[in-house]
Length: 257
Image (cartoon, rainbow, N blue to C red; front, side, top):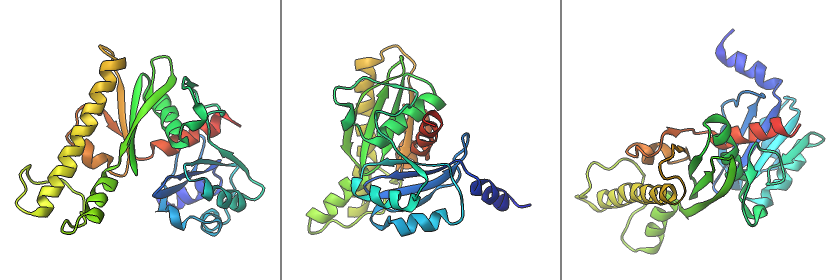
């Protein structure tokens, strides 16, 4: 029996369908109580009840666990789930962490999922850096409490802004620059984007650690689309976990049976 067939058989009896809906992309993955299977990524604009139903196919899951920052897409998930229980992640669910935040209902579901996952998988205190449409920094204290974070423009959003708002600057395909001093417009933009973004991330991390975690070991974990590119030269970040948000949904599914 091939590995692909084994995964398919396990997935048909999965405990959960996990759905992470961000502003730009949505990830769908089947999961058992202990493992998240390979996700499928689609543009959030293309997410519909038909797409989710086709993804489910003939598979039977006990629960659909959803992290959504695009509420307009939630009805599509509910319709596709039918009679299957749906858990929409928010601060009221059990996640293995406390919430110490003045307005907990304002915390994005993806950020809560990341905090739950980093605590369970890496320990605390911890900082999650999520490279999405925005780059978010979410902090879990040594007492397993979500205490707040930082939000900055995402790397792609910044470079697209330059392309859209200037007459001569081109759209970038983001990759590692060869050198700091660009010998063309594209090289100069790449240098400013990648090296500049690393500087932004490094400085925000330094300020968080100085403010809260001086002389303490902090687990710093990155996730999101451009994590591997940016983290390549950032020793401050200890690990990259591409599916951290989905792991948080799996953990929430386990804790809220």
